[in-house]
Length: 388
Image 1 (cartoon, helix red, strand yellow):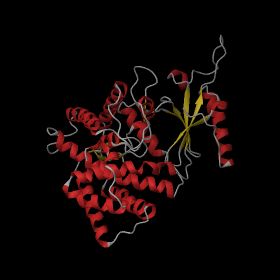
Image 2 (image 1 turned 90 degrees about the vertical axis):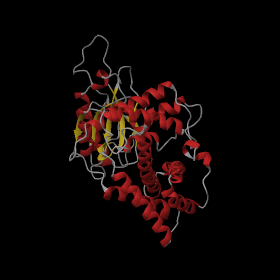
Image 3 (image 1 turned 180 degrees about the vertical axis):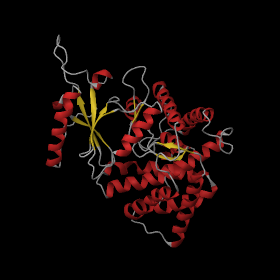
Image 4 (image 1 turned 45 degrees about the horizontal axis):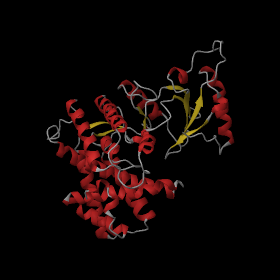
């Protein structure tokens, strides 16, 4: 759990925060002196944690019990999202949609729209990623993990229930559409930021044609999938371990949600940005999702309802689009934003990409292009699943 003190690069913003906190803390029985950094993400947004105020034994609280004590965490979360850099309106909209769908998401207790400060319910102090790291016998490096513990397996299955509930609540016209233009913009991050700026490679006309053709196939393939609400980063880093029995997995970092391919979030969950599972585990959890989703009527498309293999192939193609996108984003985070820790996971995405492009004959030219860019054939030892 992060206990780092809060530092500010902008004295004016610090002053605005202190004024806001002094007003909201008494209303929610919170202790302003306890504020510390909880986490930061790849955006300009960060999260702080604040504890409930202590009450002297034998005395009655001057205000109603705080959300921190009512929900058993003993703390609340503050989102610090400068309005000039981060738009918090989608967070508010999607939080409401997810709550209506029955997901456990943080309730919004206070929101200073002008300054971008938000007080949120605290869903717990441990992400599923942190629990996985704690339970593994070795670090979460580039090598695939073996069979998860029963506890981790149960939490992964719980996350599938949340995912299906979220998808069942889907309605067109509510969230931005994950359309061809957006898919292509995301794929374009790979040649711009990974190939050109990170690798320093300029593609010749033939190589560019291979890349364009491969990206066109990936885009067309994924646009054909049924459309639902898509979290867009549905992975263990954004899933919270329940702080006590009886609660479901918590869901965070949902502000970029869109209306898009039903295959996206399950691909994101099992082809994670920060850890890899052996393919036996990926297939096991994906089959469990497939069973739940088809019973819910979410997979009435072509032969997906009756043929897991057909569905799994489409999940792989969806994952491929995400892997190209994230490799580009991680390069950009390093080169533009100075967040070099993300680029350390790039070999994981190249392994995912090689694994999938090697599996489908129409994608083999794309695989050969990746090998040319990398200047070497990546070792199968780091290839997800080790099945090649």
